[in-house]
Length: 95
Image (cartoon, rainbow, N blue to C red; front, top):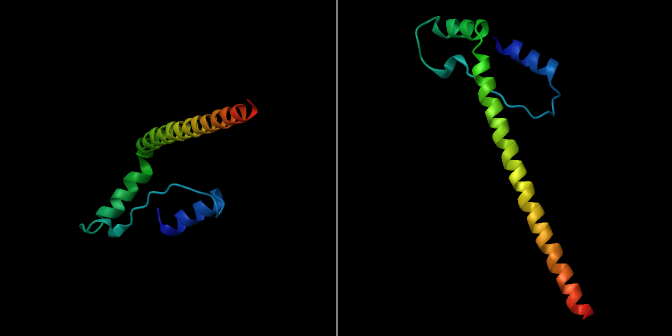
């Protein structure tokens, strides 16, 4: 895919302030014989290689959900502890 095509696709499908994950490799990636990078782009565009990356991204997303859930649970535990502490302090003052 050409850079112009990529930019057009991004503009068409995404808001400019939207967060995205991107993976871009340009022809400067690796020095090679003439035509090798062009052929690699043809293979990338014509085969279902993207599914391998989609599987990886799904795993990454599941890991991120797990971490966010753990963070929320830790925050809830701290909040609960602080509430219990404040309640105990109020009870001591009222005794």
